[in-house]
Length: 85
Image (cartoon, one colour):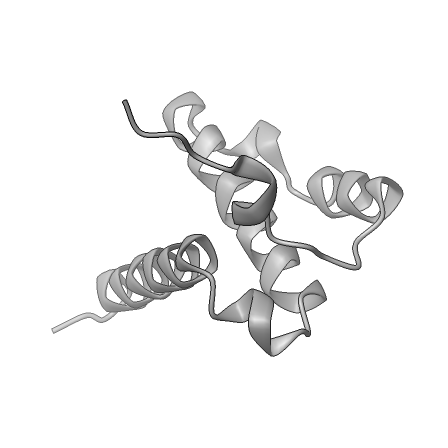
C-alpha cells in the first residue's frame, strides 16, 4: 500500500474562495451543451490556478505540470477546430 501526502501535493494559490466563485460565475453555462459544462468548469479552475500561483516551487509540482499541459493541449485542439481549410 502506497501512502500519499495529499497536503504536500496540494498546489498553494493566492486565490480566495470569493475570486474562485466569481471566476466560475463568469462562465456562461446556459449556452453550453450539458456534456461540455464539466469540462468548461475544470478549464476555468485550471486558468485561475495558473494565474494565481506565482511560486516557482508550486509550479514545479507534478499536479500543476499535468494541469497546465492538459489545458494547453485542449486549447490547441480548440483553436485547430476553428481553422477552415
